[in-house]
Length: 264
Image (cartoon, rainbow, N blue to C red; front, side):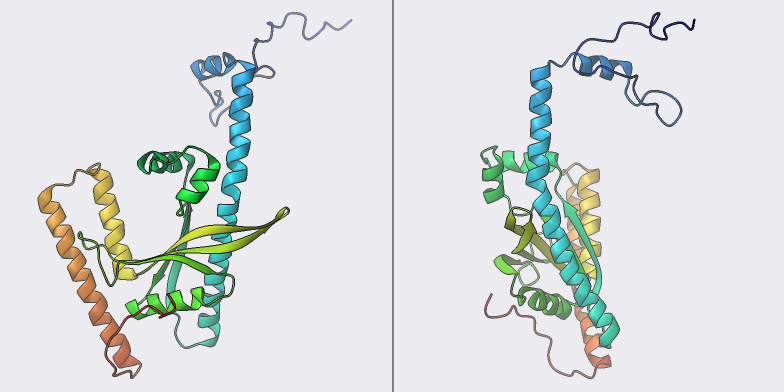
C-alpha cells in the first residue's frame, strides 16, 4: 500500500501565512528571505485583515486617478493623430504620465499637514494624476492648452503660468489643474488631473535639474545652482530663436506673443 504522502511531513507553520512553500525565484530560491517569511508568519490575523482592507481601500481611491490620466491622454493622442494626419504641422512632440505612489502621497500629506483620510486627501491634493505634454515651440504650448481646455467635459480649476513668470531658479512650464469626468459602474466621478505643458528645451532643462537635485539630495552646491540658472536662460533664448525660425519658415512675420485665453 502506498505511504501517506503527508505522514512524515513537517507540521505546517501557524499563523495567517500557512500553506504551500513560497514560490521559487528566478534562480530557484524563494522569492522572500526566511527572515521575511518568519516576520509575515508572526502577523496576527486582525493586523493582516487591516492591511488587506487598507490595500483594497487604496486601490478604490487611486483607480479613478488612473482613469483620469487615461481620459486626458486619449484627448491629447486624438489631437496629436489629427495634426499628424490632416495638418501640415504637429505641435505635440510627445506625451508622458505619472500616478503618484502611496509613499509620495503620504509625504505630501505630511508637508501639507493634511488629515490622513482619503476624503481629505482627495480635497487637498490635486496632482495625484499627472500628464506632461511636450511641444515644439512656446506658441504650441498655449495652442494645445486652448484646444484641450475648450472641450466641454474639461473644467479648468487652476493655472500657473511659469513660462510668463518663471520660478527663481529658471524653471518654466505651464501648469494646469483640470477636472474630467470618469464614468465608473457606480456613476460619474470628477477627477482632478495636473497637466504640464512645456517645450523640448524646457523639458530638457527640467529633467537635468531633477537629476542634479536627486544626486545631491536637495543640497546642490551654489556654483552648480548658478550654472543651472544660467542654463535656463540659455534654454529660454533657444526657444525664442527657434520660434523665430519656425515663424519665418511658415511665412508668419508677426511678433512673438504668448497669452492665455481670456476666459482663463
